[in-house]
Structures are given as C-alpha cells and as structure tokens.
Length: 260
Image 1 (spheres, rainbow, N blue to C red):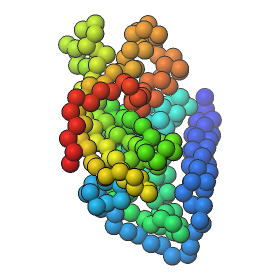
Image 2 (image 1 turned 180 degrees about the vertical axis):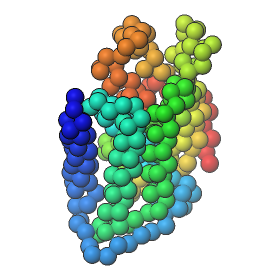
Image 3 (image 1 turned 135 degrees about the vertical axis):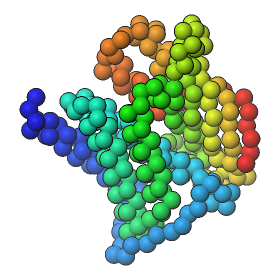
C-alpha cells in the first residue's frame, strides 16, 4: 500500500465518522437550530443538585474514550502502525467531541460546558493510554451498563438515569489468575450510576456507588468460540472491542450498593 492510499483510507475514516456524528446531532441534538451568539454554562460535576447527578459527565468521558478505542482499531485496520493509529484515534475522538461541545454553545437549546469539554479530554487521553499500555489494557476495562430508566425510552447515549459506568478489574489480566480454569472469566467491578434524574422526574433522585462481580465475555469467547486463537480474526477483534466497552445486562452482579 502506498502512502497516498493510506492517506485516502484515513481521510475516508475521518470524513465518514464526522458525517455520522453530524447526522446524529442534527436529528437528536440540534433540531431547534443555531443562533449567532456563543453561550456557555457552568453545570457542576456530581452533586445531587446538578441536572444529571454527574452521569452526563461520565458519559462524555466514556464516549470520548470509546471513540478513541474504536477509531484506533479502524485506523489500524486501514494499515497504520500502532503508534499512528492510537494517536489518530484519540485526536479524532477529542476533536469531534470538542466540536460537538462548541456547536452546543451556538445551539438554541444547549450551552457550551467547560466540565463536558474537560471530560472529553480525559476520556480521549484514557483511550490513548490504554492503547499504548497493553498490560494495563489487559487488566482494566471502562464500560457502560445500560438499563432504560423509568422514562421507558431506549436511548443509550442520552438516558443518563439508565446508565451505570463500570471499571472492571479482569482476572485474566493477572498472570496467576489467568492460569486458573474458572477464575480467569471473572472480574471485580466498581461503578457509578444515577436514578430518577430523567425528565420529567418520576422517582426520588439517587446517586449510587456499586461494587460487584462481572463476567469477562471477551475472555469467555476467546477460550470457547475462538478456541484461544493467538492471531485474532477481524470478527474476534470486533467482539473484543465491543465487550471491552459494553457490559451486557445480566453479566454484572452488584454485591453492594451505596447511595451517595
């Protein structure tokens, strides 16, 4: 593959991704249009009196992180070396998420939030760090567990009261535990989620810290369906990325729940 061909592939990934985000935003965020003046607001962080109890802030970090991880995989598949792919993935994610936040500042409905912008930066940086540190990536996952809130609408990106964000510590990332035939499939997980912050509110607002165990579906598939392949196929790489980011309902069990 020539350098020109690689540049074209990269441009297609960048342009396609921007187009998808723009189309989604036009249909879900900016239906009311824009205005000429730029407006900002201080939204706070994780307090009980904030609009979403901080779940929206973790949402910005997570989706920036997820964008960096997914786009790194895409740039790698396009033919970029590991260092270039991870830089392009993180920069694309940060650039697009920052662009969305700036457009919010000009929209009629929303405002620019410096807190959101900082969480976008933190998420993209975390994605880059994970990509450049395989041992850390093998040990820790940052995931979203989604169960629709009482509003009843399935909206994984905007239903903050249905989101729980998890940090999973994987047994498969610890050599002594990875050698165990059963323990290798389990994880310790800590999480944060809110309930009752949907609009209009239907229940008492709560912010909750979780501690529990979860199932490492990537490791389970690797040792069963994929038969321990040392050279993962494109399908396996795709499922690995998905399960590194999404905790499916029924695969995480909270052992303790602490209201904050």
